[in-house]
Image (cartoon, rainbow over all chains, first blue to last red; front, side, top):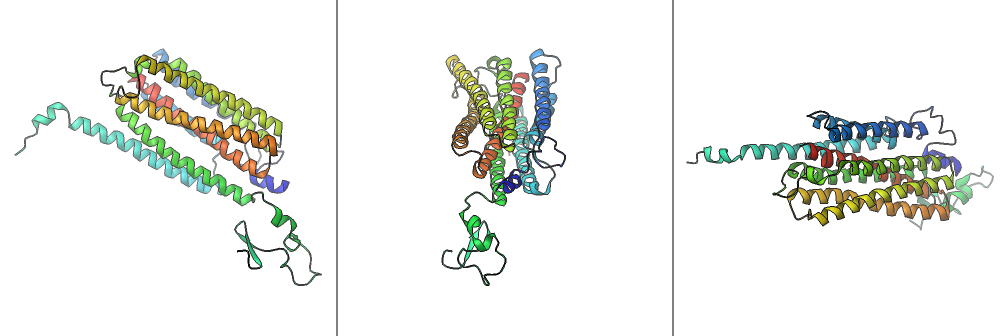
Length: 127
Length: 231
């Protein structure tokens, strides 16, 4: 059974070396992910708390997206291996759907607010 | 299924014990002797992979649930109805502490994964316990924050902004609570039965869930707290 266990989890006692890609997480991966995540958390918080620059919204969004990618790669260990093909497909689907739901909602509601400004209502002539 | 000589074992056809085989002098393999193959209740390697993929697909659908809540918050966060605004309510250093609790717990969860892969039962339990305590710290801080808001009169029915806030952050908190229960159950299971293949498969799912919650939290603190304060 021990051989089968190794096949399940993908790593034996030699996980520390991490020589072959996709064969189990290593301590190095977790440390790298943690350090990157801390940095990507600290940047937006520092900018907002310290009022360093005026327009930080873009920085917040970029840091959040980067940190999510860091989490997926270093903590969830999604990689390009063949056995994770369907995981990648499911993630791609989720990302597209989230983009449509979030982007679509904001787009529609922004246009709605814009087109239904108080002045517009009266400007429109109904015949 | 039980009537014929063929049994469906882990999706593959195999001969049942007793029905094997023609020629007693044929080389005896596991299928012919039938012991290990049929007594074994541990998941087959392929099954463990399928369990993980199934759980992954659940996580992705959970993303869609959160996407709906995020979209609602993004649209309505300015609708304060004359009530308190995000800038007045949110204490960013407090949120940063919460974030660090969850991030550290994600890291220790990773250390638990490494311990599990190295077949170290006690180290696995130890890191899971640390993860549990950090997660408990996070959820306690969140409950404390909610209680403070409600005491101030900033309840969910005050404005559209606060309704969305409590729904989104509360749903995440509920997920974290479920994750903590999942973790507690797995700690008992590992303590009792050890790192069996079944427990490993379930622990892997639990760890995926825990890391996933941290990813959702990145979205929460970026959109709910930071962006709303900047606006």
